[in-house]
Length: 252
Image (cartoon, rainbow, N blue to C red; front, side, top):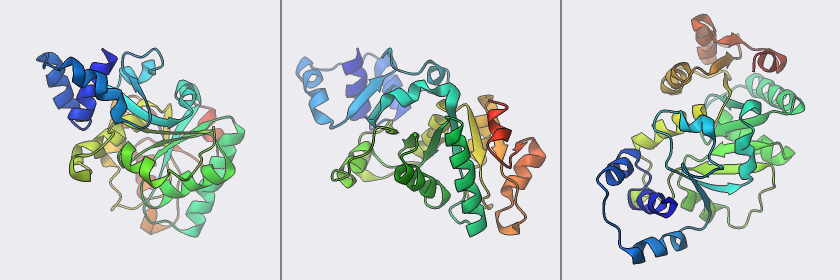
Protein backbone atom coordinates (compact mmCIF):
# COMPACT_ATOMS: atom_id res chain seq x y z
CA UNK A 1 0.00 0.00 0.00
CA UNK A 2 2.89 2.38 0.68
CA UNK A 3 4.08 1.95 -2.91
CA UNK A 4 0.58 2.82 -4.09
CA UNK A 5 0.63 6.05 -2.09
CA UNK A 6 4.06 6.88 -3.49
CA UNK A 7 2.89 6.13 -7.04
CA UNK A 8 -0.10 8.46 -6.81
CA UNK A 9 1.94 11.15 -5.07
CA UNK A 10 4.38 11.15 -7.99
CA UNK A 11 1.67 10.89 -10.64
CA UNK A 12 -0.34 13.80 -9.26
CA UNK A 13 2.62 15.94 -8.14
CA UNK A 14 1.57 15.83 -4.49
CA UNK A 15 -1.93 17.22 -5.12
CA UNK A 16 -3.83 15.99 -2.06
CA UNK A 17 -7.30 16.02 -3.60
CA UNK A 18 -6.22 14.16 -6.73
CA UNK A 19 -4.41 11.54 -4.67
CA UNK A 20 -7.45 11.11 -2.44
CA UNK A 21 -9.79 10.74 -5.44
CA UNK A 22 -7.50 8.16 -7.04
CA UNK A 23 -7.54 6.11 -3.84
CA UNK A 24 -11.28 6.46 -3.38
CA UNK A 25 -12.01 5.39 -6.98
CA UNK A 26 -9.43 2.59 -6.75
CA UNK A 27 -7.65 3.84 -9.84
CA UNK A 28 -5.90 0.98 -11.57
CA UNK A 29 -2.12 0.65 -11.54
CA UNK A 30 -0.07 -1.81 -13.54
CA UNK A 31 2.15 -4.04 -11.44
CA UNK A 32 5.17 -2.98 -13.53
CA UNK A 33 4.41 0.70 -12.80
CA UNK A 34 4.28 0.00 -9.10
CA UNK A 35 7.58 -1.86 -9.13
CA UNK A 36 9.30 1.04 -10.91
CA UNK A 37 7.98 3.68 -8.51
CA UNK A 38 10.79 3.70 -5.95
CA UNK A 39 13.39 4.01 -8.69
CA UNK A 40 11.99 7.40 -9.68
CA UNK A 41 13.07 9.20 -6.52
CA UNK A 42 16.48 10.09 -5.12
CA UNK A 43 15.54 10.56 -1.47
CA UNK A 44 13.84 8.80 1.42
CA UNK A 45 10.11 8.96 2.04
CA UNK A 46 7.45 8.29 4.65
CA UNK A 47 3.81 7.53 4.02
CA UNK A 48 0.89 8.12 6.33
CA UNK A 49 0.88 4.35 6.94
CA UNK A 50 4.47 4.27 8.17
CA UNK A 51 5.07 3.70 11.91
CA UNK A 52 7.51 6.64 11.73
CA UNK A 53 4.82 9.01 10.47
CA UNK A 54 4.09 11.48 13.31
CA UNK A 55 0.75 10.84 15.00
CA UNK A 56 0.17 14.53 15.61
CA UNK A 57 0.44 15.23 11.87
CA UNK A 58 -2.25 12.66 11.08
CA UNK A 59 -4.81 14.84 12.86
CA UNK A 60 -3.95 17.90 10.73
CA UNK A 61 -6.24 19.09 7.95
CA UNK A 62 -5.47 16.99 4.86
CA UNK A 63 -2.36 15.29 6.27
CA UNK A 64 0.25 14.51 3.60
CA UNK A 65 -0.05 11.02 2.15
CA UNK A 66 3.69 11.04 1.48
CA UNK A 67 6.55 13.06 2.96
CA UNK A 68 9.79 13.12 0.99
CA UNK A 69 12.84 13.85 3.09
CA UNK A 70 16.60 14.23 3.32
CA UNK A 71 18.33 14.23 6.67
CA UNK A 72 17.57 13.06 10.19
CA UNK A 73 13.96 11.84 10.24
CA UNK A 74 14.16 11.34 14.02
CA UNK A 75 13.73 15.11 14.44
CA UNK A 76 10.07 14.64 13.49
CA UNK A 77 9.58 12.57 16.64
CA UNK A 78 10.53 15.53 18.85
CA UNK A 79 7.14 17.21 18.52
CA UNK A 80 7.03 18.42 22.13
CA UNK A 81 10.34 20.22 21.58
CA UNK A 82 9.48 21.92 18.29
CA UNK A 83 8.88 25.62 17.79
CA UNK A 84 8.32 27.20 14.39
CA UNK A 85 9.74 30.63 13.69
CA UNK A 86 8.68 32.80 10.75
CA UNK A 87 9.17 36.44 9.83
CA UNK A 88 9.17 39.08 7.16
CA UNK A 89 10.84 39.14 3.78
CA UNK A 90 12.24 42.49 4.87
CA UNK A 91 13.74 43.06 8.31
CA UNK A 92 15.82 45.56 10.23
CA UNK A 93 19.19 44.82 11.78
CA UNK A 94 17.61 45.18 15.21
CA UNK A 95 14.86 42.73 14.34
CA UNK A 96 17.09 40.01 12.88
CA UNK A 97 19.58 40.25 15.76
CA UNK A 98 16.73 39.86 18.22
CA UNK A 99 15.49 36.84 16.28
CA UNK A 100 18.97 35.28 16.31
CA UNK A 101 19.18 35.80 20.07
CA UNK A 102 15.88 34.02 20.69
CA UNK A 103 16.80 31.16 18.34
CA UNK A 104 20.02 30.60 20.30
CA UNK A 105 18.13 30.76 23.60
CA UNK A 106 15.66 28.16 22.32
CA UNK A 107 18.51 25.88 21.26
CA UNK A 108 19.95 26.19 24.78
CA UNK A 109 16.53 24.99 25.98
CA UNK A 110 16.92 21.88 23.76
CA UNK A 111 14.26 23.00 21.27
CA UNK A 112 14.08 22.06 17.60
CA UNK A 113 13.68 25.04 15.26
CA UNK A 114 11.18 24.64 12.42
CA UNK A 115 10.65 27.01 9.52
CA UNK A 116 9.93 26.99 5.82
CA UNK A 117 11.91 28.45 2.97
CA UNK A 118 11.02 32.07 2.31
CA UNK A 119 13.12 35.03 1.32
CA UNK A 120 14.14 37.19 4.27
CA UNK A 121 13.94 36.21 7.93
CA UNK A 122 13.05 32.56 7.34
CA UNK A 123 16.05 31.90 5.12
CA UNK A 124 18.29 33.78 7.56
CA UNK A 125 17.12 31.44 10.33
CA UNK A 126 17.88 28.43 8.12
CA UNK A 127 21.37 29.80 7.43
CA UNK A 128 22.02 30.42 11.13
CA UNK A 129 20.97 26.87 12.02
CA UNK A 130 23.21 25.47 9.30
CA UNK A 131 26.22 27.54 10.39
CA UNK A 132 25.76 26.72 14.09
CA UNK A 133 24.63 23.11 13.49
CA UNK A 134 21.40 23.67 15.42
CA UNK A 135 18.64 21.07 15.23
CA UNK A 136 16.43 22.33 12.45
CA UNK A 137 13.51 21.09 10.35
CA UNK A 138 13.10 22.91 7.05
CA UNK A 139 9.91 22.64 5.01
CA UNK A 140 10.89 23.15 1.41
CA UNK A 141 9.12 25.77 -0.69
CA UNK A 142 10.42 23.99 -3.77
CA UNK A 143 10.16 20.40 -4.92
CA UNK A 144 12.39 17.78 -3.35
CA UNK A 145 13.90 17.05 -6.76
CA UNK A 146 14.86 20.71 -7.20
CA UNK A 147 16.35 20.85 -3.69
CA UNK A 148 18.43 17.72 -4.36
CA UNK A 149 19.76 19.14 -7.62
CA UNK A 150 20.72 22.42 -5.93
CA UNK A 151 22.48 20.80 -2.99
CA UNK A 152 24.10 17.72 -4.53
CA UNK A 153 27.55 19.01 -3.56
CA UNK A 154 26.56 19.99 -0.01
CA UNK A 155 26.87 17.55 2.87
CA UNK A 156 24.20 18.47 5.41
CA UNK A 157 24.92 17.63 9.03
CA UNK A 158 22.93 15.16 11.10
CA UNK A 159 20.98 17.84 12.95
CA UNK A 160 19.05 18.78 9.81
CA UNK A 161 15.86 17.52 8.21
CA UNK A 162 14.47 18.79 4.92
CA UNK A 163 10.92 17.74 4.10
CA UNK A 164 8.48 18.23 1.25
CA UNK A 165 5.26 16.56 0.11
CA UNK A 166 5.96 17.14 -3.59
CA UNK A 167 8.80 15.33 -5.30
CA UNK A 168 8.45 17.26 -8.55
CA UNK A 169 6.11 20.08 -9.55
CA UNK A 170 4.25 19.95 -12.85
CA UNK A 171 6.26 22.16 -15.23
CA UNK A 172 8.41 23.08 -12.20
CA UNK A 173 5.77 25.62 -11.15
CA UNK A 174 4.95 26.22 -7.48
CA UNK A 175 1.17 26.08 -7.09
CA UNK A 176 -1.15 28.14 -4.89
CA UNK A 177 -2.28 24.89 -3.27
CA UNK A 178 1.28 24.13 -2.24
CA UNK A 179 1.64 27.48 -0.53
CA UNK A 180 -1.32 26.41 1.61
CA UNK A 181 0.35 23.03 2.15
CA UNK A 182 3.37 24.83 3.61
CA UNK A 183 1.20 26.48 6.25
CA UNK A 184 -0.58 23.23 7.05
CA UNK A 185 2.67 21.30 7.35
CA UNK A 186 4.27 23.98 9.53
CA UNK A 187 1.34 23.88 11.94
CA UNK A 188 1.15 20.11 11.85
CA UNK A 189 4.71 19.49 13.00
CA UNK A 190 5.03 22.37 15.47
CA UNK A 191 4.06 22.69 19.10
CA UNK A 192 3.87 26.47 18.72
CA UNK A 193 4.67 29.25 16.27
CA UNK A 194 6.74 32.36 16.92
CA UNK A 195 6.18 35.33 14.61
CA UNK A 196 9.07 37.75 14.37
CA UNK A 197 8.40 41.33 13.16
CA UNK A 198 6.93 41.49 9.66
CA UNK A 199 4.86 43.92 7.62
CA UNK A 200 1.45 43.83 5.98
CA UNK A 201 2.89 42.68 2.64
CA UNK A 202 3.94 39.35 4.18
CA UNK A 203 1.18 36.81 3.68
CA UNK A 204 0.79 35.21 7.11
CA UNK A 205 -2.98 35.59 7.46
CA UNK A 206 -3.56 32.01 6.33
CA UNK A 207 -0.87 30.64 8.65
CA UNK A 208 -2.37 32.45 11.63
CA UNK A 209 -5.77 30.95 10.80
CA UNK A 210 -4.28 27.46 10.52
CA UNK A 211 -2.56 27.89 13.88
CA UNK A 212 -5.77 29.04 15.56
CA UNK A 213 -7.82 26.21 14.04
CA UNK A 214 -5.20 23.62 15.03
CA UNK A 215 -5.04 24.96 18.59
CA UNK A 216 -1.36 25.91 18.41
CA UNK A 217 0.23 28.40 20.78
CA UNK A 218 0.98 31.63 18.93
CA UNK A 219 3.86 33.83 20.06
CA UNK A 220 4.86 37.23 18.71
CA UNK A 221 7.86 39.49 19.21
CA UNK A 222 6.78 43.10 19.80
CA UNK A 223 8.44 45.96 17.94
CA UNK A 224 8.65 49.74 18.01
CA UNK A 225 9.36 49.83 14.26
CA UNK A 226 6.18 50.88 12.45
CA UNK A 227 7.21 49.19 9.20
CA UNK A 228 7.20 45.76 10.86
CA UNK A 229 4.42 46.11 13.42
CA UNK A 230 2.15 43.23 12.32
CA UNK A 231 3.32 41.27 15.36
CA UNK A 232 1.96 44.02 17.61
CA UNK A 233 -1.44 43.40 16.00
CA UNK A 234 -1.12 39.67 16.68
CA UNK A 235 -0.43 40.42 20.34
CA UNK A 236 -3.58 42.55 20.50
CA UNK A 237 -5.47 39.58 19.02
CA UNK A 238 -4.19 37.28 21.77
CA UNK A 239 -0.75 36.08 20.69
CA UNK A 240 1.72 35.66 23.55
CA UNK A 241 4.00 38.67 24.10
CA UNK A 242 7.50 37.25 23.58
CA UNK A 243 10.78 38.87 24.56
CA UNK A 244 12.89 35.78 25.17
CA UNK A 245 12.86 31.98 25.00
CA UNK A 246 11.53 31.66 28.57
CA UNK A 247 8.27 33.24 27.43
CA UNK A 248 7.89 30.27 25.07
CA UNK A 249 9.25 27.31 27.02
CA UNK A 250 7.17 28.20 30.07
CA UNK A 251 4.06 27.49 27.99
CA UNK A 252 5.05 24.61 25.72
